[in-house]
Image 1 (tube, rainbow over the protein chains, first blue to last red):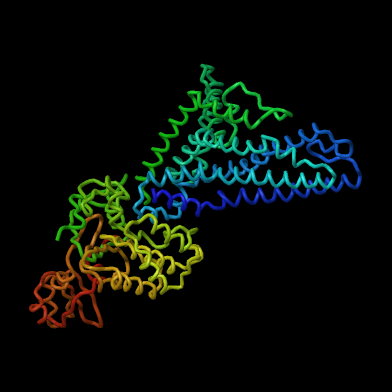
Image 2: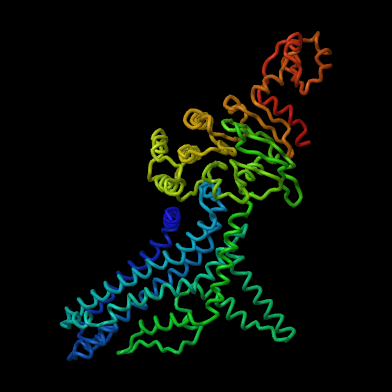
Length: 320
Length: 285
């Protein structure tokens, strides 16, 4: 287990840029820009006495009812989702390129020979990379999403306070404000299960390709799809090319994008961002519901087979 | 002493070529073996088979393990420097030490740090900021601090200047080697390692053409600067090589008693480089 700890650390050292710095820089830039925007619009209100963009502060100049304040507080709580979503969008690219380079870069610069001179099995290497990609990489975006939302909420509330509206009590008594971070975190296992087959495919190609793993990983499924579509168009014998595009190509690339699982199965939930709704709860419920679908587990089984292939390739690929 | 490496009918075939051709040999413990051969002779292929980095045909036993199926156990006892500059470019000195300390049960951190104290390497330095020589210093410091039974060095000093090369082999001999360890080294700079070797193995076209201890080499091969009047006599003893120096013939004999050769002119022990050239004649023809 100690070996595993050092292997994961190794992954972090090598990929600190994608795992930590990329989401941190985006989070910092967003926080600064957003705070400036809030302060500027608050200042605009004090001068012109008109209205602010955003959550119902339009009402600030007039009489603020308790209902207005509760809606504003809930709107602030909802912003966990778009803010975390922004950081997760950055993570999509990180996971994509990380998976592709994971078992390729060290073969290209020959440092694989150094790693292979250590008493580490190839399955340990592959599992440590899988762990870093699927578990470690989402942690910073999730944590930063919560942190940025709290900061923005604070800035917004202070700006509102300067305008004579005290939202603090309403925010602190909004249950979603506390639960949403937990609800988002509770979706992490679903992301791991959902992304695993896509990451495994990329890692397998990464362990196999002599050059240009990105071309192989992307072109093989896409060209196969084009061939199927052309064949169907020419012969009309009923080749299920649309099924292929949706369930293979779409699933493969969608696997990197958190939340796409909600569209893949109809779990019969309606996620709304309206006063009185609880979108975090709905997302969590709908996310875990996908575990009831066979195709999710079939994909996991295929991912396991591809992981095994990646380990074998890592072991016996001749680095001549 | 049982063999550290024992190979029987070891072969490695690629699509069109035979890189290692039905080779058998034993390497006992406590030796420093020079595996010497021209480019493309199969040296690296043989080492890769020994290290479990590639598949092979035949039987191979390294420290009691089959490198093909028991590589994970084998790597606890074996270390190798495959080529210069294979350390990952992003890694820092400190990280490299931490990693090896964390994953290798036989790593001695104090030894590694003591060795690095004699270099210009600093803990926060990244490999990409180092010169080639410094990378090798780091790699050697890591490897020398591992108490492995077998160390394989494949062209460890390629591209280094002579100062680094001398220091490399000196450190290896003084601080690392002992009677329980075995070192296999390949290099093209044969003159530089001949004084540290205990055994010599020449490989050509995938076959071992010479395998002997250095003492045997000194007994078997003698170079004679033949004076003019003995030229015909000398020629009749079938020298394996002949060259001209200052108008005199220098001949290399295999297995002719030295007492007999002393009468033909001045004799001396042959250098590995000259022996190598004589043995490999016509390799690229």
